[in-house]
Amino acid sequence: MASPLSNEFVLPTNKAIGASSHPEPDSICTYLCGNSLGPLSKRSKALVEQELNAWGTCAVTGHFSTHPYGRGWVDFCDHITPLFAELVGAQEKEVACMGTLTANLHLMMDSFYKPTPERYKILLAPTFLPLAHGLDPAKAVLEMSPRPGEYILREQDILDIIAREGASIALVIFSGVQYYTGQWFPMQSITRAAQAQGCVCGWDLAHAVGNVPLSLHDWGVDFAVWCTYKYVNAGPGSIAGLYVHEKWKETELPKFAGWWGHDPATRFAMPPKFSPIEGAQGFQQSNPSILASASLLGSLQIFKEAGMMQPLRERSVQLTAALEKLLMQSKYFVPVDEASTRQSDTPAFTIITPIDPNSRGAQLSLLFLPSGVMQSVHDALTSLGVIGDERKPDVIRLAPAPLFNTLEDCKQGALSLERVFDNLA
Image 1: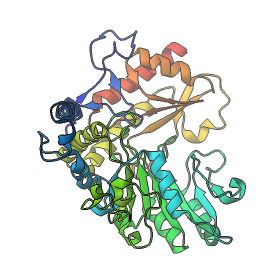
Image 2: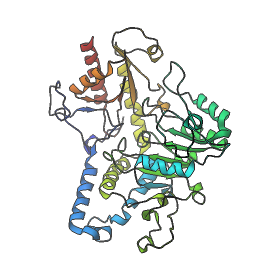
Image 3: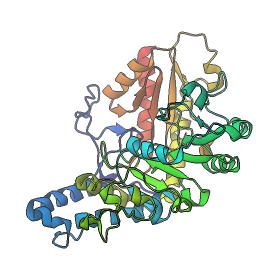
Image 4: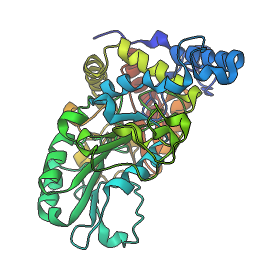
């Protein structure tokens, strides 16, 4: 297994997270929560400090050639765009560093959801989605759920509803990786099936970007949006990303235009007519936060150093499989097909993330039984120095992120969980 880049990150200590039961308070905790918030990279910290220095020494002139590090703020995102494009499998003109996940989703919905009396439905997995056309969500939204007694959506069920309802569907939009279960949807086959029925297909990649390999351009995805504070490790509330396939460049132009989406050659002349940058960057509205962008640039540089997603994916598959094997060896583990019918009050857990590595990223979602046990388990894990992510009422997500997590983290996570269950029992 390839080595992690753990030394490139600043990880919290047991003392800092309140691990009151850990015997070594000053040692690094077992951080298995990169799916919720990635840790601080030393590269990001250094670049943010450089930009603070540039701000202090150059002030407004830092926008241009006097920037002491050669990253004038006017063109700052030019350093990010090629790395974004490589990370999601797109052309540089198809991606933009801008906004937030939800704001970008609103922009894409406004551009690509065009309901007609015949074609007005939106097909999605359970999630939040804005609907701003005055339509009744009960009629316009087709929200898919797993079959009774199951926790993940079957690919064939998704393809079947697209085939059956396709003529009335305007937009298919799924999460690339479902946040709750960790299911990685078959993005290429869903995109192909949706477009074959005349539907637009977009993706929310919040839990997919930096987690699984993506080929948005080659898959023909119409649009996608993502945040960067999870697996991309760009910091809390960090600047987000947007993708629009090049096939839309002549027909789908930004409606909510902003000056930063204007042609850079005449942007500062403030002409009366808006001339958008070709591609996704034409959707930009305001100049980006440089401090947030610097943090993102630092994290993306580490991805580049690691070889981007292919080597990371190989390591991710190995780590997730190792954690899964350790968890399934627990005497408190029950198979997922028994969980929904289990009657015992004895504390136990199952894994609701797909067992197939091709259907998941770096996340295992543990469902705790009976209902109400999870919070006690989560708090006890924290006291032992293991940070996971609670999802009420009954799930804890553990994510061995390949950039910084190790096999030892997997072992500590599993051993600590067993200790917690022993104490509960």
